[in-house]
Image 1 (cartoon, rainbow, N blue to C red):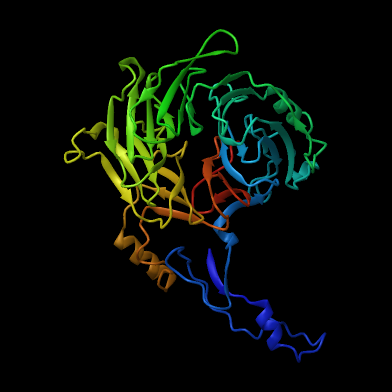
Image 2 (tube, helix red, strand yellow; image 1 turned 30 degrees about the horizontal axis):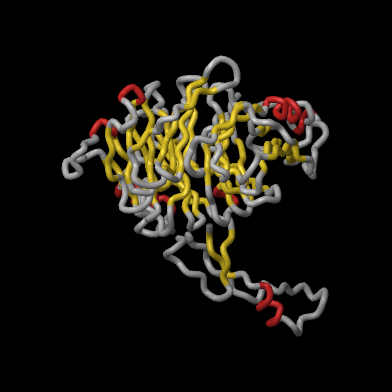
Length: 450
């Protein structure tokens, strides 16, 4: 975001005496100020200023709204969306990349792979972004939804009724894939569908849920009463959910993540400020538990490319990176924190490692920022001096910005969740109360698949 003087109402009042057709503009009488980098929570807008997006900062940027405020989303191989108004939405969008730089048409299907099944402009295809919707009714509000890694059309959803349900969305996926020529602008139909499986053994509603990326059908779910249940798939579309819960936290379980390399290991985080690592072979108690933040731990992300790294985000606006090889039960001797950032002024709402770069992660916060970080970067005084000499001017960037911070995206209200695109390096999808953004920063090296 950059800041600039822009107040049309004030300009109009100053130009009351101008005549029509005299060539004068209501904004021409206002001297323009040079654009500057905007820091939320640090900078304040003066009278007559407003924030404007700098389009040169993006290779691709699209926004859309479906009607209901979106609280959560979850990628399948791209993205599956979850809403707060009793509906699970399946959405397909096409043509979200700029034709000049990326002359292909991408199909966004929430329960499928990305497909280049459109045609480019030279071959007569339409490059106008479009949406098609499929809506499935669920009992109760959708707290969170996750898709099975191995079979993305199979999804698990948390309801505020306290139930966890498993769904098969294959028919809706096929319907979206077959209706590319007929774009449904309204998407008003709501499909009533029975879930494959429904579990009511939790003592309260919850938000934490995750499918194993290694064992097909294995699932864990955690509730607001600190209980975690393990789901084991059986023959057919059924699951055996353990009646005895895993207990290791003293407050609500906020997020769960399976290990990317160990079949029996998962991590959890809690309102009690701790993170626990569990091995299901060792019983119902955590293998190790440690204080992670001084406030609620809202989200965690296990690095799929560097499996020793675990990221966590807290209610106090901080986020940390830990090397699990250095964990210790003795807090005074625990040297596992390899990076800790106090950049945000509001709670961290989502965090996720890039599936393409082991050192890159994205973070969102309640202060309406989505940021991208590269932990491999360090401040280089010589490089900065060389750049300034080439440009013959001082770089217009605040001195207190961490060198690991690559990009700041703003403009969404009540930003809740982000996910990296599974096939396109550098592209993300974010959700907020006012809709969705699909973005690809211009300062991150990224190419579309051939």
